[in-house]
Length: 130
Image 1 (cartoon, rainbow, N blue to C red):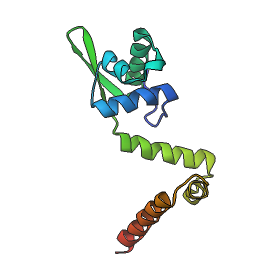
Image 2 (image 1 turned 120 degrees about the horizontal axis):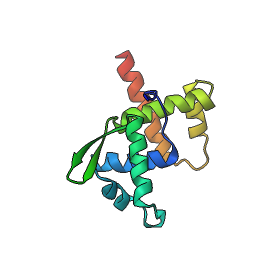
Image 3 (image 1 turned 30 degrees about the vertical axis):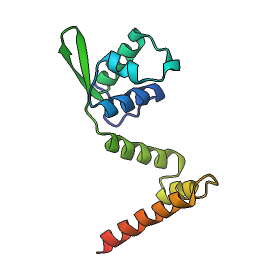
């Protein structure tokens, strides 16, 4: 059964993808070793999650001895962009300015972070008009 290409990851799937993105590729054991010690996830559960990610076409696998080696098919930045579009559409009425306003109005954001955001916006405006 083919899944939709624009599907979003569940929290645990994203946790696994983050480890695979960091590793580049890996076996079930490789991913399990990267998870926090308190995760206590069974090998079979981890294997199931990776098979689901393969069914959703977020990873491919190849056999190496008795193990499967999983490789992401989607770059992290591509998924980040897709997730932001999804968030913007669902929570911010598809108005990116509302999303950014929520971010910059957060009391916890530092002046340094605000300066970085300003620099990014300035650079984008300069490049688009230049």
